[in-house]
Length: 259
Image (cartoon, rainbow, N blue to C red; front, top):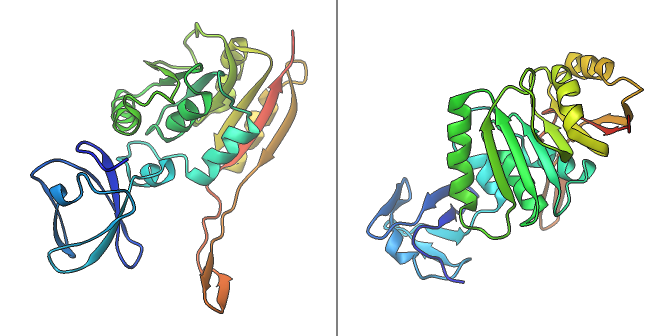
């Protein structure tokens, strides 16, 4: 399908730098590469190469979710793609699942959850801050608006530490400063056998969460982190990159026991 007006696209230059824009008739993309009219892209096939006014070549793609997460406006720190994938798999977020998320943050994990649960699933997401909530809703609608492959979104302002939650879910994902304070509240919403995943940057957070996961209510707890190292592959030069995406957070995954 050719590129359409109103779509997000990713422009990639010869050095791999990426620029995300929304295609609008009559507008132009301006950078140190020169000017590129949007009208030259609208109607073109994805993956085509175009030249700017300074004859710089740019390749055009629709952004992947990982591309979008790294480029979208941020309120809170995003959950990075390397961690999103682990949460989806290790917490077994599946088509048709009912998921509780807190907090929404910038919406990066929310988008992945909505895609994972599919059209028959639902994601209930809570955030206590109105500015984070508003920014996340803008990010989510910009990427996934009118996409039939995504699940139903129930986005609310709320405090999962204190507020009674009127949802029943199969999975719960917490990206909170003090997730141990939400364990009892969220646990009452999570069906027996359901999975709770918590995303935490520091060791003390992991320790406090572990203390809150009492053996009469929780089992099969595992904590891990994901490190991502790219490789440079150019002819006979095959070596690890000089930089890597190392520690971002710990992920704890645990299962709910029957009462």
